Length: 310
Image 1 (cartoon, one colour):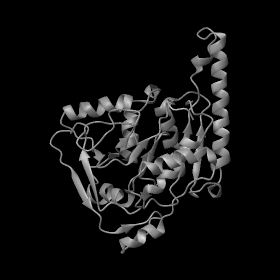
Image 2 (tube, one colour):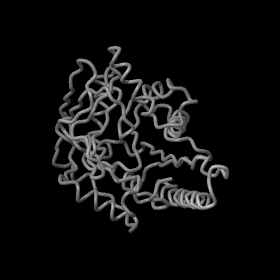
Image 3 (cartoon, one colour):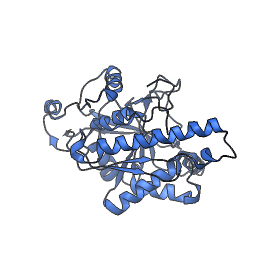
Image 4 (spheres, one colour):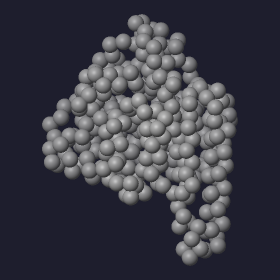
């Protein structure tokens, strides 16, 4: 439950912003997890009548939010991306890590050949093009034994510590940055073009006509000074000794191993609650976990905690 429920405009903005992942195949599935409200919120011994009424109103909002998502994304033909979108509601409170594990289990059964994963939060949307195809090349061809995770920096008017160039997370050991120059042009449908000027013609801006979504879509556009849909000329990654749940691209086998290492019984927290300490310990022991930080502000924070009125 978040304060903007039952509105779906924030998650819609995030989903629509994935058109900035240039070269992402159109058949790549998208999984939306919906966590339930903690059971203690309904414990009459811990809550007075006013709190109980308020919490049941929250549950009603969550139910309406879930219904709206099903109505919007049940069929690929019903969403602007025409992408297969799976919606996974939980009947019990699983927290973020439990919800992530639920999504990973679905991937393992129905998409066993999947090798990589974009982990996206409900209030961080892409505002700049990302060369997905180049990221895959870095992970698979050029640094298959070195790069496991790439975190994307964000701009936020709600926090004073937005990540900017020159304010990078701590480096692990003596690792150096990676610069991979674009060797071919990429379009959003995954095809390759030899002429970079054609790229803009291949990609269209998809905005939902629902008035509930328009204000956030406009806000994203107004904060994106570079309206180019062309892939960046080079992808630069900086080594990092810090794990975060902020939007990232990750090697799936490594991710399952890392989350599994903390044990299922400990997953009633965000993954970073455990993985931050694990990665820092590895660094202290001289072991690099393969974490990198993308160069450039490519995300915008949409204020998921509801300090703005929607």
